[in-house]
Image 1: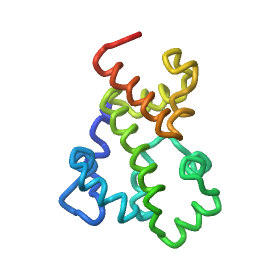
Image 2: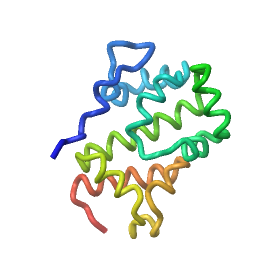
Image 3: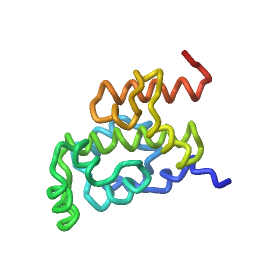
Image 4: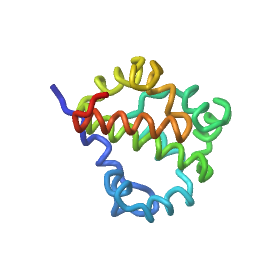
Length: 149
């Protein structure tokens, strides 16, 4: 079975070509710079295919309409810092999820399945705000380290 654990590591971060996605999450100051510069749509398009979100879900996460999301694509527009931060949060969840499950399909199934530890919500339903994201990240870390409630 193909392992998907490190599939995001080959993607180079714009503005700082020496960093890949694995690096950027360990260098918080660079992460802040990346967010403040804004994420270009072309980078978003590259990384979003590894997440489990469609355009409608992305629009909801980014608090924009799907029409606006499509306009970003047509003009390769740069996302605002608040939207860039949300994009990176979803990539961080995906990165950690792939580290835990080592398989994109297994991780996507986990994201779509109601979870008792998360109040019977699907993890995918919780990640749209920062507190829900933290719950999901905590649950992923508990799975990673074998801590079950």
